[in-house]
Length: 102
Image (tube, rainbow, N blue to C red; front, side, top):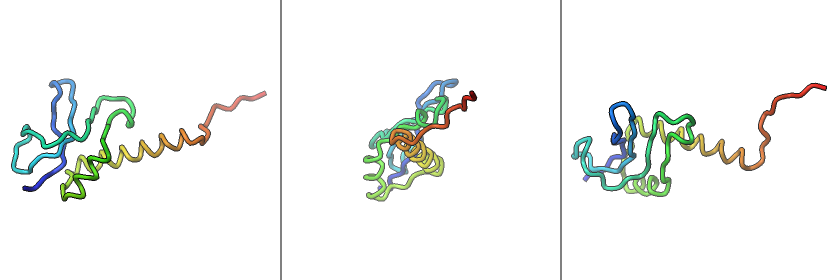
């Protein structure tokens, strides 16, 4: 049983929305997933809002031997990058504010 991590489309024709799922490789694109790991909304404004992934579930599946698709791999990298920048802002690094002249 080869397990892959990939996107599964669930949205309407003009409103795409995807689930990030762990599914057996032999099942088709609309096959029943073993587990839903997260969601991807390509129409969202910010990268942080586009991808939501449960990292614990993702790491568990990768440890078991599941392979992520190319598209999902790039989305996960973007999600981690957005998460790191969000943590840096929360940690107290000042944002670049507009300069005021006297």
